[in-house]
Length: 485
Ligand code: ADP
Ligand code: GLC
Image (tube, rainbow, N blue to C red; front, side, top):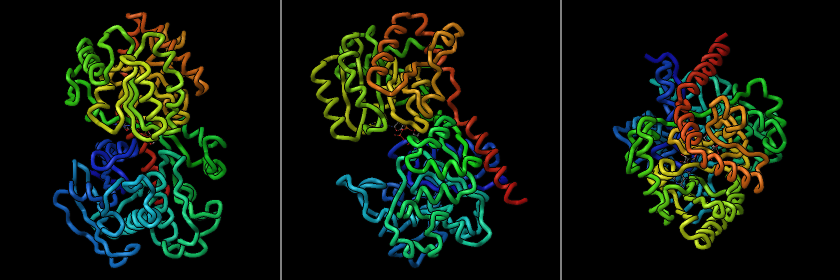
């Protein structure tokens, strides 16, 4: 029986629509909260791929005017998720991604598309659907940032609001002229409201006006208070640091379970670690690498963007090849980075293999077959690929930032003698430091007994959602109690 209702507000949700880790979190948190007596429904935009996946959709509200056209609110289920879907063809019924068109350019009406998401969330918060009146509205990233703002300016009895930052680099800034069209009172456009350096700031609004702010790791919660990490929002966040906390993400352990994984040729677990060799062989074959069980095989599963620091890796491939190691990189995004890796694959045949594109199957194979996973991010709010790497026994080699710093235990001297290491960290995030980390990893690889121990430590790490769910549960309940007082 649930005694607390949470409305989650998200622009993507796994497995229906995903561009990154935000979707994974939005998709997994509801089930993790259920045992705590928390019923979550997620309000999402009605993209075509999402509408197509719904079963038993039931209209629960009709909008005459939703930012330029009519719309309906559907209550529906899909993939085990309880959803409110905003069906509004003029905003969401189009080919392409959730944020960009097929030409890769942001949709020109993103301001309206995500104001609609937030406004509908606020409406549900205020009782639009009598059967589900939430106690807490939980907004994810800038796309949902206006939800706490709409609720704040509604003047009515409202639920508590939580703003979660998955990535502060994306802030949702739009022209101030939109303020009346979006339905905010003129006085809302001030430094105390939705104004952000002369623009209309979606993330800023949420950070300013939500009752609580969370981000996805304790270290990132500290980093965004500093000028470099806050990316312009550090002043506001310092003002609100009393309501800011970091809750580390978990990993969807049904989707990422090496013992039952249907995407890989040889499922395995701690007791059947030998089976991993077959996955490595398959990975080498699929990526055009030499079929060498003794070569240290590094993997990468990533968006190709500046954030992820993969240019440092592109600069380190000679070092990697000289050590006799291999690289299998799965990535999609930036064309320049992609072509650098493609050229590197040609320069190092059998040593560097590249798979460009977004492919869930291949992502699982990389985690299951690689010996180590490289994540050289310049910043990383949490990071999920190092969590799957831990679970799959691919030792993470990570930059010491954000959630990477919080989830991987560096095999330093003390960690080694205490038997607790799970991977390798490096700092600063520079090419020489990464190269040193690659060499250090190679040295560990040569000590087979130690490597096996580290692999076992990694696989035994608790990366489940349970810990995070306990923390969200406490946060939501404290907030509700505070508002009732
Ligand atoms: P971010 O959200 O910043 O991209 P995360 O590590 O939090 O970083 O989440 C990335 C998610 O996307 C993971 O689930 C990862 O497996 C997946 N992913 C990233 N790139 C690819 C790719 N090219 N193909 C398949 N899955 C990918
Ligand atoms: C963002 C961050 C990533 C985090 C994910 C889920 O995409 O870049 O570090 O894991 O959100 O919270």
